[in-house]
Each structure stands twice: as structure tokens, then as C-alpha cells.
Image (cartoon, rainbow, N blue to C red; front, side, top):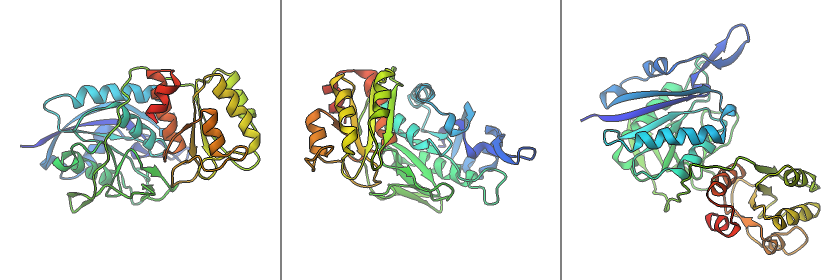
Length: 323
């Protein structure tokens, strides 16, 4: 019996081709045209297509992610559906994937896929990536693995995948853990399982969450802007294992005193934030202030989690537990 896969199309480079007048890639490949490029998958699955959007990934927003999650939940709950494949632009793919990871609770595979080359490029990788995503979504082994990202015949967990290169087809990586599996000659092979999933299911989100990446000598003026502009949460990509320039410390303290949750992560691509240093701006001091430590999350994923957490509660202690 064939699998039933729901294909949800959102756009991105995978659905773009070069406009000769602009000499630049723009949206221009429809879902039917995309599916016609994917060979032999009709032998293993029947498909239902949903044209959710056809936008570049920088146009993706938390509001659209929330609407997409509703479409995903509605379809993944159907008895006749084996799994879902979502095409997406690569620039924000990891954020949408993590959003869906936190708000969906199904053992069925949900797979996001994109391409690094547009349809006019030599070596267009879109069709092969879609095929690999479909094979993954059809695999019984993909059950209970959480939301997955499939690119370049590698399978990643939405929790730890990130885009690492601006143009390379193998751009998506999990810097610390590696891929969760691979697709080899149409066979889906998983190397490892994931830890217990976390659910922050909500139909309400808080969009006014700022993200600041720190560098040497930065001051607190950007934090003052967030505070005065009514931001409800702030994520800070700190230095090293969780330290900030001393001139930032006062702004962080002021935000915390105003009951604005401040989540600390590192600008390093590997490792966790830890309260190691006790100097002005050191992680130990920040923890004593009430700053929430975000583990090994990236800044963009910590922001997604805080957007969802604030949709559930504005209680700092509850938000702290989510992290």
C-alpha cells in the first residue's frame, strides 16, 4: 500500500528561476512544475499538494509560521496521511522547522526541504532534495523523530540544524551532533534518535522579541531601545560561554527589573552558556540578575522559543522552565 504524503509549498529558492530582465532569481516555479521534476516517487506515495505561499524565505514571519503550523496540524492528524513535506527557503528554514518542532505533537514525519540553487542554475538541487524528503517522510523509521530537515541526502533534527554556508549545497549542518540520518540509494538510514521532545503548543505568539549579537565594546543603547519600544522579550547572543561587555550589564539589569525576560545564548556555534565568570558582565553575575540561560540554542532558535513561550505565559519562572 502506498504512503500518502501531503506536500506543502511555501516558496524559496527551490521555487525560483532567473528573470532575464532583472538578471536575478525570483519566484516563478509552481508546485505542479516542481512535482513534475521529481522522478519515481509516485511508485511509493500518492500526493496531495497545498500551495501555502510562494515567498522568499526572508519574507517568512512568526505569524506565517503560526498559520503554517495550523495547516500542518490539521493534515498530520488525518488517518490517511503518512507524513508531510514542506518546501521552504533556506535562509529561515531552521527557524520555521524549530517553530513546528515546538508546536506539533505527532509521531508522523514532518520534513522541511529547500534548495541552494534556483531552477535556472546548473546543478539545480531542488528535485533531488524533494525526492529525498519524500523518501524520509515515507520511512517507518522516521516516526517519532520530531520535525526533520532534509538537504543534500542528509537528515537533521530541527532542534540542532543550522545553515552554515551562504551558497554550498551541503550548507545545513548540526555542528555538534551531525546528521540524524542519511538517504542512500533511496534507502533511509538513521544513525541516532533524539532526546525527549519539548512541546510549547500555543495559538498565540508574542512577536516583539528582540535579538542582539554582541561584539567587543558594545553598549546598552540597543537594549534601552527595546525596553522603551515595548519589547516583551530579549535574546542576547553573548560572548564565549555567556559573558557580555561591562557596558551592557546595566541595560540587561534594567530589562530584568522591568520583568522583561532576557535569554542568554552564545554567539559561538558550539557549546552551552554557563555561569562561569564573576566579573562585571560575566555569566555568574548575569545569572544572579535573573537572566535565563538558553543552553546550546542559537540566537534565532532561542528567539523562536521565547516568541512561543511568551504566547503561553509572561511569568518569568514559567518561561525559565521552558529553557
